[in-house]
Image (cartoon, rainbow, N blue to C red):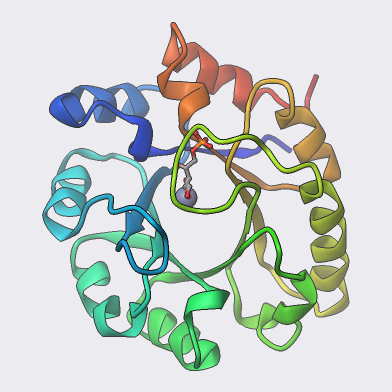
Length: 219
Ligand code: DX5
Ligand code: ZN
């Protein structure tokens, strides 16, 4: 099966967002990956609701919103209002994760949980059956353009096993350092969705790069 490709807006040209959104609309990409950073949970600040609303207005594909923020519960409703289709929170940032997941679903969004490179997938054992997406961070969150962490492959295998064991429908999404070299190996290991920022937006032909990522796994 062809992977879901989610170009990360974090690497787009913020002074020409409409142009980059159009490029994604007209490409083989499936989702818009939208990174929200608060300068508390991660050492960087990205953008907030007005920008997400603007993206949503032009985007013809679902918004895959990745929250790297300390207090997600406070803003779930607001993210639903600005057009989030998938809403992913970090396990490390949510004290009452079960409640947060139910909150996301009750607002009509798909629920995702992200785990940092140090965290074991076994931490998801008790919520995996409720999840639509598990996002494995393959870099430490906060910045685009970082180096891919090789241990990710082992984690994909463990997660796949957990998903099967618990009869979960969760998709496995990989975020950070995805490129044209590791994409096929990630798909073969069991990844369903690939996020790519730097690889897409710093390439000479982003539309073609998206197509090459989409073809990963079939080659
Ligand atoms: C990092 C973000 C990623 C980032 C990926 O914290 O979650 O989505 O945009 O960027 P690349 O693909 O450049 O590693
Ligand atoms: Zn992300």
